[in-house]
View 1 (cartoon, rainbow, N blue to C red):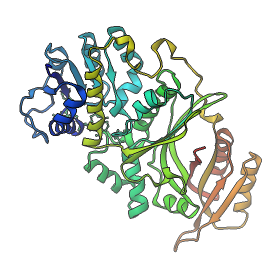
View 2 (spheres, rainbow, N blue to C red; view 1 turned 45 degrees about the vertical axis):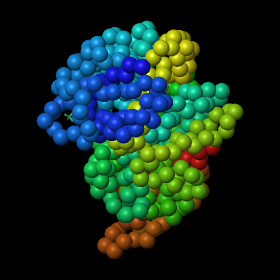
View 3 (cartoon, rainbow, N blue to C red; view 1 turned 90 degrees about the vertical axis):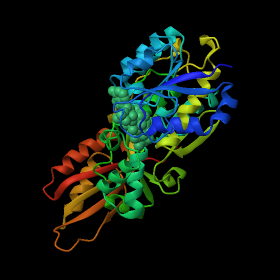
Length: 436
Ligand code: NAP
Ligand code: HSE
């Protein structure tokens, strides 16, 4: 049968990984897809840059419009990243009747509703397995493997860079900046690493997962986001002493009030499998009413792990080329006319236990003030530890673990605590998740 010709926009980390995997596994991939998949053309910014992949037979352009308008190209693979011009290019490819594969979670989270509508109307597929969890086929799991279930919640370590940094803090005692430098060197971080460390990348991914899990539109703007910039090696150490590990999690949970959508650092009990997910590894727990808990684990970033997901999408799209568009797996798992809005629960209404780290003046009455303020908000303390004073310091760290309380009660208590003259610096607050 005639080979299928793809055009790749972007030959960076993931683009080169994709060409390498297609090249090395050409026979296995053809046996699965039923046809050979060839890369006919690729767009890059700098045509003189050396590429870490075989370039024979690939026509290079610096204008991505050449790819989306080329009649010889059946499938466009967008691996350039960013919102624009990626959005315009994908819409143009769809308008030209081409199927699209992308690893661009930002684009899907922010513009997926528009892109899927256009693809649906045009009868083409937009596949995005590589957008979440690197090499973990979590989109396929949620869309197909768990299609029998009412999904109650999911929670995941879905950013490899932050997990790499937190692991580096725990295992090597490196502070934040050093871990980030290493993650960038290894090709895990986004072009702007602020997306990783401030939680935005994880929020993009959570937005996508929640939409597919619950059959709701993509709701990035309503996702609560916190990153890991303020976490210190001491927090990692204190959490460890209390029997917890600090992980950056995305949590989507169905409640009676609506859907919780939140991304933030968490203390996880060290006994949970998720607490042992280290380095660039990602993991997602999904709880469905029929299947119970399932855990999906794998490499969350990097050239070939991500290429594994891109190429799997290519095989799926090639297999479906001759199928009736109405019978294909819907983009967001639920039929386009069955996607329903559910209210997103405001963060102030979410209930969690908390870890607090306060730097207090070492004098009598300070602890009494702290416990009174928490008590006035009905926040019950589970444990409290005063660490020793370091030489030359007039203050000591106090670590508090609370029982679950509403976020708004904790916000009010933190405002009052922060105003005490005996507390110096910012109070660190990290939520505790038990994954039940
Ligand atoms: P990257 O290494 O920065 O590569 C981007 C590529 O796009 C480069 O080859 C660049 O060309 C090309 N490019 C950018 N703007 C262009 C333009 N206007 N015209 C033509 N070419 C252009 O990025 P990446 O890490 O591979 O990430 C690509 C996408 O995959 C992003 O959406 C990212 O979020 C997603 N993703 C990445 C990973 C990962 O582990 N890296 C994992 C999952 C998903 P030059 O090389 O000439 O500069
Ligand atoms: N920057 C992302 C991460 C790449 O670190 O997880 C994979 O999506």
